[in-house]
Length: 357
Image 1: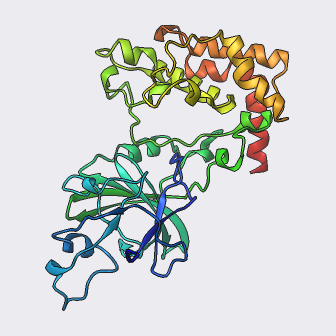
Image 2: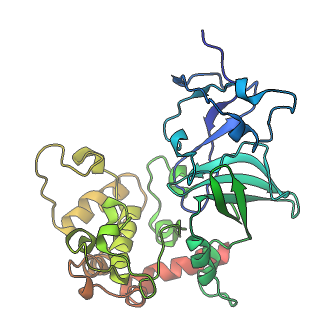
């Protein structure tokens, strides 16, 4: 039987912003969880690059050139190949960043960063530390600052606030870093059925990852460069790839997000991960039929409360307008907020949830 390595991976449930899937942390030796992951026989020829930036660095008397590390392969985590010049910064549980942030666990990762739970030894509180890949811009931090005006506005407390920003210099380059309050778990994971009572679903606030955010007025981005997930990508990003995206693209994506909050997730029954129909061409029903079959039916079955006739009409009217094929015909964000469904149902529930918080 192979010897269990010094550290093994185990799922955790903290979250940072919109990092929405359980990621992995590194447990110290002696973990009772055992060694159950598929072995990857990978050895580093120059491990000193990683260990020198770790709290578990080798003693000065050890020859790092002869020291080898053995890793287990873990599905759903960042690739080791991305720890290269221009890529991720190597961090280990126990590291101290900026002489202030003591790394205690890993929260997740993305294509442009890794995210860590740290103890701020100066303020005596936990923070989420986002460490960007080398030489990346501080785009997300700038967007968050723009969304945090001096005076509060309705919903501003749901926008993550920057606590601190700094840079790390490592073997792979210079890395922009910033800290935020950890967002904890995703409410969707708390529900076995992934359904919520209607009044709860109306008031859910989604904190987004702003790493790919841009201002169309200042920074044009063509449809071919759209990074929106396939399921939420507007048609203009597919068919007008040389045309600059505008705010109307977000209206389409927002509609799919609202719909997703209410619907029953049956996509995997019909499509594979690439969006290809499993059993030939699948013809979608009308939006009214889809709402009854994918939303109302399962809310009724699980006793989660269903839309009454008036709210159904207002909701579907807004969905039709937001999912209009032509970008110029979609409502603006202001018009969405002023729609009947928002004014009569969503905003009142939002206000009640804000007062309770």
